[in-house]
Length: 185
Ligand code: SF4
Ligand code: SF4
Image (tube, rainbow, N blue to C red; front, top):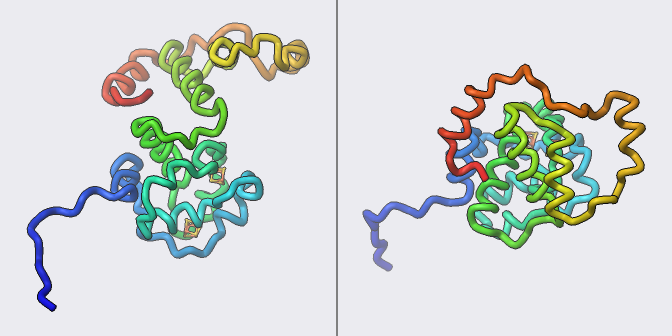
């Protein structure tokens, strides 16, 4: 059988896109699974971090964007601390979220994308995260105005939430980041 060598460049795979956005070398993963063993949410997600990486390597397609870990990863960096290849999984998950939003993937887990957007909007406005502003945006988006409000006085008393945003942020610098990354949603 004749083998035809095409000059046409292969289309960018999901792994290529993730590597380009995150700057992480996914190909270096050894599948030692230290990340999955330490991940605090892997026990409740269908796919763990090591499997996510493996699926990217095997180019199993955009179905991976519907992976619940993409939206449930809490960016704790435990996996990064344990990884012998220094693969920053939180950055990989950020890239996957970004691509999922761009492609309007249907795999969004409940209101997590709205939470993500509320967080980014407060950083965009105040130069730093502002919990109260983020909660307000989230509650407006979900129309869940009274849900969990009973916890608010205790959080305030324990200093877990501030009434006012921080004024220490370098807003100009943050604005420049958002300007350079126009596709941050
Ligand atoms: S800890 Fe690192 S090398 Fe090991 S499976 Fe996870 S990502 Fe791959
Ligand atoms: S950063 Fe995400 S994937 Fe890594 S251990 Fe934490 S929750 Fe799991």
